[in-house]
Image 1: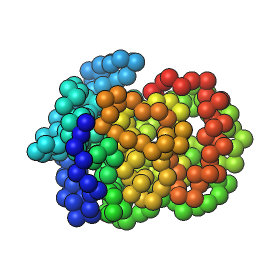
Image 2: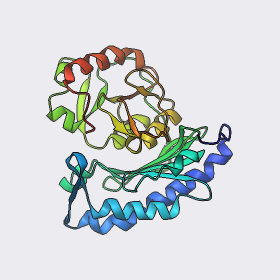
Image 3: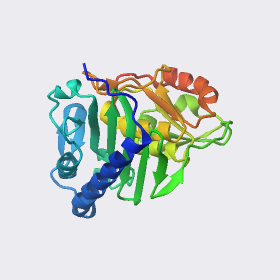
Image 4: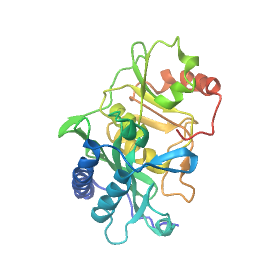
Length: 280
């Protein structure tokens, strides 16, 4: 059981965000030659999930900069030795979220970093090197995109809203039940990047009934909450992190005025998906 240290203050979060920004910049710089060059030596992990030299290099850079003192570490590309469970503060990292997009040269992947305290993701940073976007946010400090303060979209009607959907889910036909919905469904890659775009108001919502790992969503959850948005499991529960089992149920995120409006569509898409076991 991790040791509780109390609710973080904005003064405590400011240096954490500085560290996140520094780490994202360093990781992005380190893998820049791999972004521009040909993708080689693509390996595959369990579930036919690709991993590249960029994943490993970014992971190494992030781990060198982020953890200090008694802070724990959880990353998709590091062996999880579970010592993090005794830590109140834990870094939850996906060095490249959207590796399939990275390999395919689709600019919808990102580097994702979250700072978790007592099970809650309280600060996050997401960098998309291809679009030159850096999203930073923390409890009490709000959210910025490339240094400009932003918030989740305050709209309260779904007519004409933009909903970001997993491209792989769309390709599998899991969104066909929403073909006639009164909003625009836009396929996209990385779930972390989708959450960041919801946080800054560039999209109105995103959801998936498929399980996600903590590193997939922790940073995006921090951004959406810091931006005043709504984010829960598809069952309506708050998301908690630094658990023994890193797999989380589906997730839904939207602007603060849309959670009820989207509720029936989230439920409808569950029954139209035909799957609850995938992690893509």
